[in-house]
Figure 1 (spheres, helix red, strand yellow):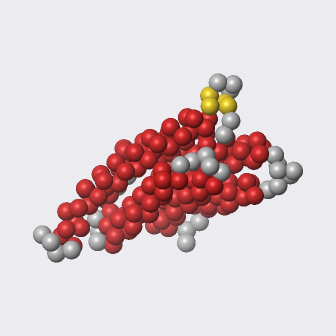
Figure 2 (cartoon, rainbow, N blue to C red):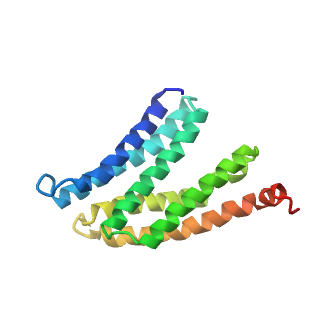
Figure 3 (spheres, rainbow, N blue to C red):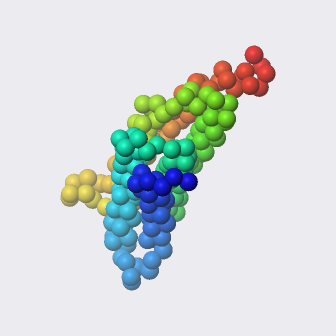
Length: 193
């Protein structure tokens, strides 16, 4: 397993996931709810920044590796799934939308794995739709974790919920986009051509 700064940042992201979840299990006498929300939001934002930064550094320093390419999306999916599960439990996120987002991540990860095994991983490379979806969900989640009014004017729960709806729509759209790209190979490998 290679060890470099980008992989260290990815491992840091994995380590931060239990903090986002665990902060809500502290007694409110130790950490009041508003402070739990702020702590979870800040930890999630730090984790999201490491997601961007580790990829940037890996490309800039030419430190990309097969292990990093494996670990990075796993860390991303664990981070999003953990936060969404907490938000559903706190009744701040719609369970159906969260299921759609998590289910798509599992399905597309499996598709990418299969495509890599048959040597066609470039066929399901990240698209602009996927990037917009990621931006919407990575903005929605901290807003929902914060669960308060920002700067005296922005209802974070309202806007977080709207962005999660946008993310869910883009999730379905991008899933069909990836499946459409992969469909010729799926048909070919299943012998239906």
